[in-house]
Length: 222
Image (tube, helix red, strand yellow):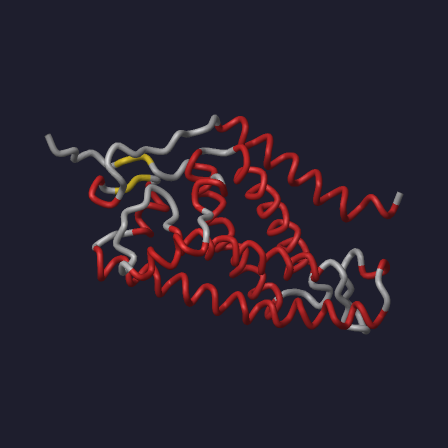
């Protein structure tokens, strides 16, 4: 008998990470354009992004099956075959191309947010770790921090284009899946379902990530 119930795909921590990161990226731009002159909110926004990224790295190792890097990061030949076949093969979590898109997004965000810790405008605003680098290094990192925004916009555009493609070409609503955590059986491999990890483990990863960011910023003052 054909299965009709939606299949569990994304756990709650992964979905919250995704949508919080969307809000924080938007908040980073808004706080830069319209925040106070000391960039207080922009800095805290960056700390939150770093915390989420560290959480995602940890959750990509110990989290639910579809959140693990080993589940969705495939080799280049697998990605090429997937693209050659018109991106038709169903995937429980991220498809082979989407997996590399995730890595690219996390890498760019990590570099941009990390560089922001060392930036300076040479007038009023400096990152909390600016004193650790030379003026020349701070200039380079400030440029990376600014240019990273445009690279990020390009990745976001590709991400949105992929969502539209899957919706129009294959009828797969990936936005809905990232909201509900479930996919229609026609869009997952037969018999597949996510193996979910407990929420307390996600909470522990988040606390440790926040602690790591706090220590990284404040330990130098001791």
